[in-house]
Image (cartoon, rainbow, N blue to C red):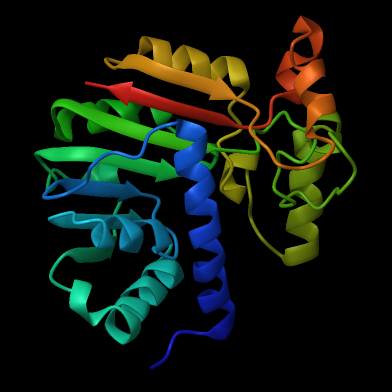
Length: 246
C-alpha cells in the first residue's frame, strides 16, 4: 500500500529541515561505513538521508506506530536500494538492550517530547562507541510562546504556562473524552531551558557544542535580543542545538 500523500509531503518537508539541522549544528559527520541510531525518527527523512551518505547501518526508532509504518512503507516503495541499510521499528529505548556499538546518535525535534531525558542520555552513553557523539536539535522549548506545539489548544502566546495545568487538562478531557493526567500525556516533556542545561551538564557526556535560537523567521531577532536579558531568557529561548561526546 502506498504511503499517504500527507505523510509523503511531510517526509519531503523533512529534507528541508535536515539541511537546517546540519547547518545549525555546524557539523555534518562523515557517516561512511558507520552505524547510526536515529532517535525519534518520525517519518524517516533524516535516516534515509544518512543512509544515502554511505552509512553502513541506520536504525530509526520511534514510539509512534503510524509514523514507523509510514517509514517502512516509504522505504519499500521509494528507496528499495536502501532496505539492507535502514531499519525502522517501534521501540522504547529505555526498555531494550538490543542496540550496541553505535557511532552516532541523531535526535532531530525529539527532546522536547522526551520525558526521562536524563535516563535516555544514560542509555545513549551505554550504546555509543568510545568517542561516539549525540547530535541533537529541538524546539520550541516548553516555556516559549508556542512551546505547547498547539496541543493544549489555548493558542494565545504563553497562555499554556499562564493557565494552571489542571484547567488545561480538564478542558481537553472534557472536550475529547480522554483521561489525561498531566501535560506530559500530550507528548510534551515540559522541560525548561534550565532543565536541559542541567540534564546535559549532569550527564556522562562532554558538551562540545551548545547554541540556542536559530531561526530564519524575520521576527526571530526580537526574541534573540530578549533572550540575552536574564529575566526573559527562559521565555524567549526557542530551540537548542547541541553535540555531546562520549
